[in-house]
Length: 301
Image (cartoon, rainbow, N blue to C red; front, side):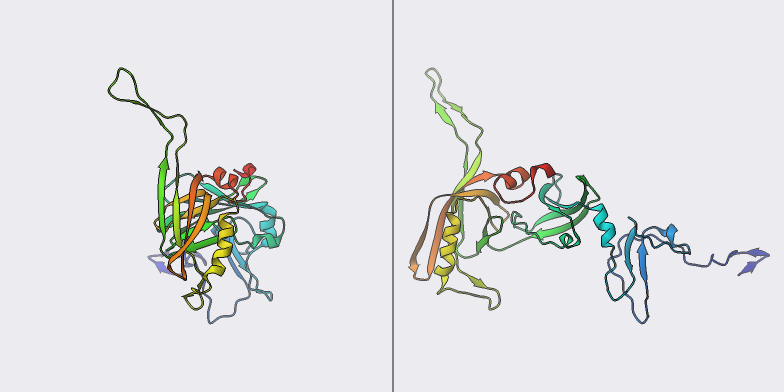
């Protein structure tokens, strides 16, 4: 207690305590040189007045009791508030989200999952991914994280399978717009008629496809044919694919005509060439679903 001129500057037994402060950007907690029986963190500073109410609610960040475990969450509370986890993405700076996955949650084990996004573009494209808890079809709060997509190869993917190569890559796209030229009898110039709304890319792509060993960082050149045999089956399975390049270009495509190999330059350097045609918009949930590249069902859109 401090008295100045008969006045109390600190007039209560709690007035010298630090003022509770709300800080939203805490990433880690470090505890050292101490024995901790209980760690409770909440964003609700009004609940920190003794006696403490440690009932888990939406303001609770974590509660670790250290009863033979190091977990600090409340799965039972979460399970009562979640029927699915919805994953969406968009390119940073854009506004429209693409729904990628809608994962049903029925038991605790369902909260542990792994999913791949094979439709992300290269060229250091920045994406925002949001994880949304869903209860009975209603979205909860968005948890958004930013990811940089970058790779140094030509990539060809189906929903569960990917082949890629950085070797001797050549891609020649053509923009297709159906039209007819009509020559008039009394005019100098013809009239161009566009007979449909078709507007798509097609082209050829080629590269040397050889198995790469990430452990030894070497190419298995002599056994390249063993890698290309299933790749040729992949090219001719009739399923739509994602074709994407390291510079950021990407398309939903179907492989047409007959893929071929040419090893005229060297016995072990077989260049695989295939023709493709664009069959959907890489940024469209509808097109990704229709082409069998994602599992998100229409009722979730």
